[in-house]
Image (cartoon, rainbow, N blue to C red; front, side, top):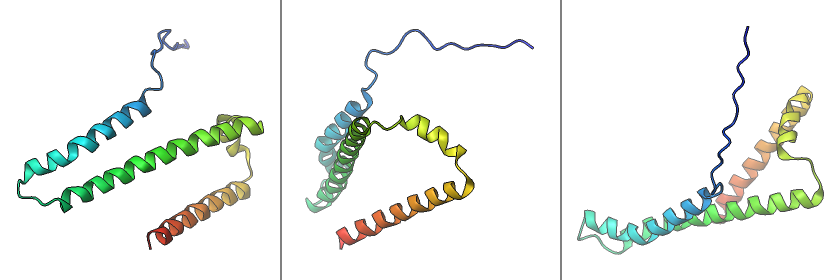
Length: 124
């Protein structure tokens, strides 16, 4: 049986990390064009209706900015603390015993539940 080896292409894109900037540019353009697009559908629309959709868009933009900031801080703290790479930690998850994996998943679910409750409390 003959083994086929697939090589990665030698050409790498020059702008590797442009996706966050493109998303930010699209959100910024959407922020300025969304009110005009909403009025095009109905010329008699009041000013309250488009502003609700702009608040939703502002919430999405804020969420993405905070998510990016948290990810950047996590990477910085990870390097400062000298922890092993995230990829190696994920690969070692399968080497844990079953009860340890279950405990980790239950702790993750509990944190997710607490975050959801915190979000509901913040809304109220």
